[in-house]
Image (cartoon, rainbow, N blue to C red; front, side, top):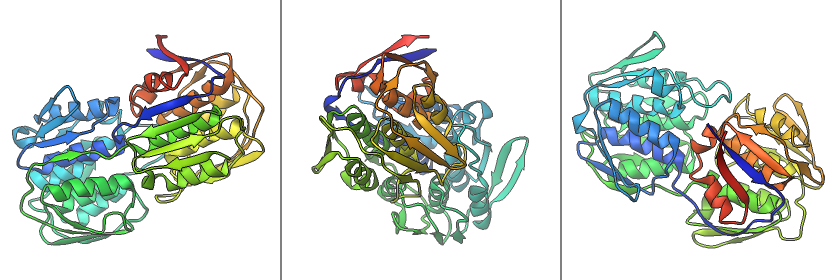
Length: 419
């Protein structure tokens, strides 16, 4: 198993290109199950979660081909079985996204209850209740969701809580349902909108994506298309924080600034100069120590839970005291304990972390606990005096494409080494 070795204390400078969004790629790969013809997906990031999803599709008999540009062609016409086994689903929660498309297109699905990051309970009851309201017969037995339906029927679905994968699963299922489906209290994330755009290009009739009410008129069939995934807003935010925490100057390219409003506002509050173009953002913190910021996570368009760990790292070396309040997941502060090993002054009170900024962190071995937390430990390592080893980086590889290469091109002393 590999680890990252980081020699801290170097201000990052330069440009970095942002990859396609993991959290848009995975549902779009699942959506390809709905089409009668091949779907080609471009701007796909080379990540472990993408590889797992491709393996899952292949296990079901779907034909998946990849060219040298990471364009993925998915042809579901060869599907043999509607089965998502535990050994794959346990490694990645997003596997649940095949449930809606399989039931809608093939009338059946046996999908293992999911696993993924250890960041708290993320129940699938909303997915199940929505499909039942659309007429599916669902049994949960032996750790599997077993769903059957001749053809789903449109329904009014009021989601108990805002859920991204729940919204995506039910929106995909509704595309082939008979009649109209209305999803209320829908997630508004850009990745949900990207999935809707892809489905529309496949022939779906969807209105309201990006608002809390999505309306889907079911159609008899969907066709193939070629679709380019939007840039990753969480990777974008992570590299901007890397520039700010190291008191450097970093420009991200191939991004969508309009999806980063909450993050850019906090960077400006921290004292960074922020420049924005059509597809780029620049953060300049040269010669200045960041100021501590208060963060409260909430569903989009508020501050993303997937960025709180990175801002926690920023606060550890900032001037003043910053609080991080996590409202989405109840178990997402494990990285705070690891950052204490680097000398961070962090007090935890329930879902709140109170961080007193220190002048400098000191290197120590640390261990990644989940995907975004791993990124925060890398950021802390970039400013810690000495050599920091970040272990269990398979978490990072699930969501960041060649993070050590991208940071190295910004001047970081970082390398991947065998453990």
